[in-house]
Image (cartoon, rainbow, N blue to C red; front, top):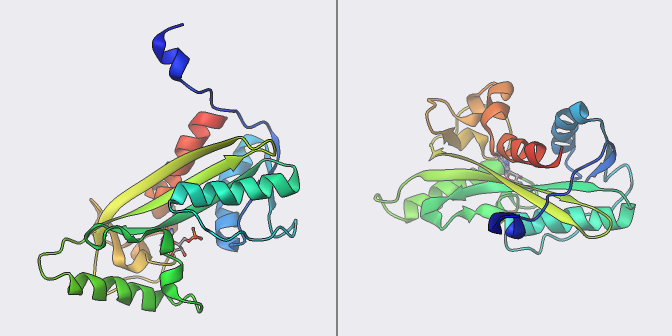
Length: 209
Ligand code: IMP
């Protein structure tokens, strides 16, 4: 055994069978179910099991994904997968970050949230850069408290005005690097091939299957 082997933690494999998708967001559950169908996984949604939604009290995407997955695994007695994601604008100290959903207010008004991003960037002055990235953290937890986490990222710039009506959330003001259109204008298949969620999924699939 080499020194590297001693320090390397074995990643727990996910066996075929039931997996709780610890999200009450129907869109996310659908996307995750599609991605997992290929691996002999039987997805069950947290809503189907009537599981409560925990408060997202973590200070990082990974911490929030882990607390959602651990709670669902503990309450269901099954392995559980949770996702936490958001937009980070570098000139705004990576805000809205873990508060991405909350910037849209109780009515989930993303026109308001996108305007807040733009107003905050203007307040930073003309020198402020427009670099931004989306992050997606995926956490896979087991009922014995074991958890594995994976983080995906896609880099781009904030554009104004918002463009396109595809996707959701901040997609109309995010233009991925190397592309001339926003995520809001992009075919879903194209977005899903390069998104932060796809990146996190690829890392998880490579590690646990
Ligand atoms: P969560 O449900 O707490 O993880 O909140 C994620 C929030 O981040 C969403 O409500 C969106 O505002 C934003 N977000 C995450 N991923 C995307 C994306 O792919 N496009 C646009 N907005 C996203």
